[in-house]
Length: 310
Image 1: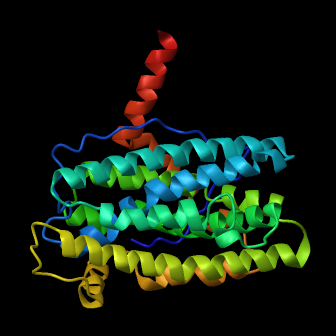
Image 2: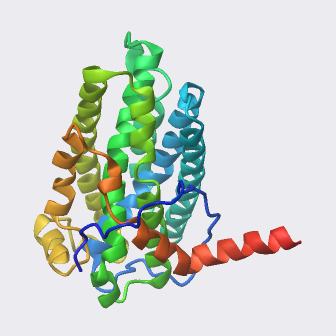
């Protein structure tokens, strides 16, 4: 199915970003949760390697930026974003525990991800670089906005990825991915708006936005290929019989199990337009519709309702 943006209705009031305290039962989810498709499975599994540390870092950076926000509406959006990202981090970390229980240990990879976010992109510039505190914060906000461009694109893709349904992908994993993807579309503009609000004025703000994407895009590509290769190489069920390759990756793309390179790559020129705004990505209508039917999101909403009645 096409992943082109479906028209959203004109908003009558501001759309509130709220976290959903979901949970998932992984006991019955197999290691190859897309049957007979280990490459597609592990390319998507890279999300679980990157997101626990990455989304904790998003929350830390936004917490640093909160005092700079003068718009009360944006402040509430940012708080909702932080709540959603914190939940994403926790739920993807549970998947790492599930992989470890199936003898696929990811610590050899995730320690480098932790180093990237905690040390290289931490509260202070690496190696004592003489960068003013506010400028370092602005740069890291530009990195978050750039990453969120890709998560919105991936979120929109997975909401439309009928190939995963045809392949009989595990229902619990598919719900995790689509719940997360729907929330990425839901808060698609918050990181961008946060950067625009705190990133200064005029050309320097735009130049820093370009610099953030210039750093982010190649690093994400490298981490994704490295992570895919790592997971396939350490998969105990494959026992070294398979290696990551673009040939196998592209076969999975052809089956609709992974987004096309064009879908991912076209996100860059859109983002680099001076007039760009992430509200152009995906369909809020589609995201909200999925969240209304997601088993995990409905269970979370039911728990909130029961707690309110009690």
